[in-house]
Length: 66
Image 1 (tube, rainbow, N blue to C red):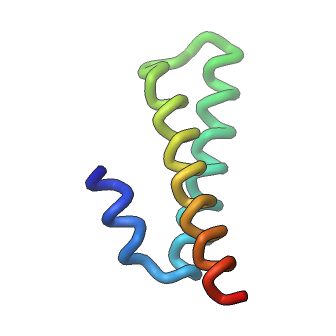
Image 2 (tube, one colour):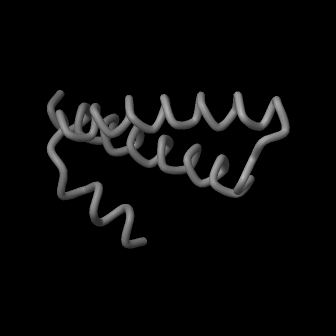
C-alpha cells in the first residue's frame, strides 16, 4: 500500500521515468533468470506488479484529463 501512495505523489513525468527504469530492470532480471543466475526470484514478480501500478496510475490520469 505504501508503494502506491508514494507513486500517487509523483508527477506523470516522474512516473514515466520510473516505468522505463522498471522495464529495464525487469529485462535484466529476465535475462538472469534464463541463465539461472537469479538471486531473488520474487523480485521479478514484484517488479511486474510495480510496472502495472505505474501504468494504472498513468491511465487514470489520462482518463481524468480527457
